[in-house]
Image (cartoon, rainbow, N blue to C red; front, side):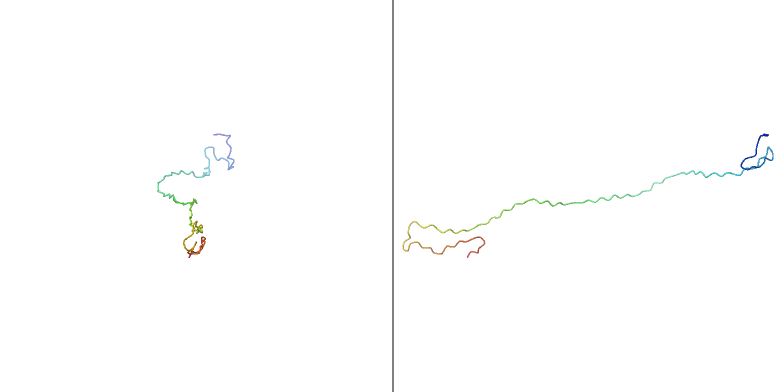
Amino acid sequence: MNPHRQPCHSCQQPMLSPWFQPPAPPLVCPPQYRVHDSFMPRMQPVIHPIVNVNREHIVNVPQHFYTETNRNVVVNPPQQAFPMQQGGFQQPFPQQQFFPGQPRF
């Protein structure tokens, strides 16, 4: 027996006998969790779409064309150096000058 034993400060009850202590109220601690994780594989499709883009670029490239025109020019004939027989210098038709774009009859 311990004569120096004092009552508990929280309950402030005197001891009944040195060999007998009243039961203390239970203390309930917060629960501790034991987690046992297990994993099961499951297929997860992951789709990666790819878009093919065909681009056409228009580039100006010089292409040279040459136009060709023909001009018919009638030149008055030179004077003949010798006279014609019986009538001198004769011209069967009057001479005309033609220009491009002008109809020729």
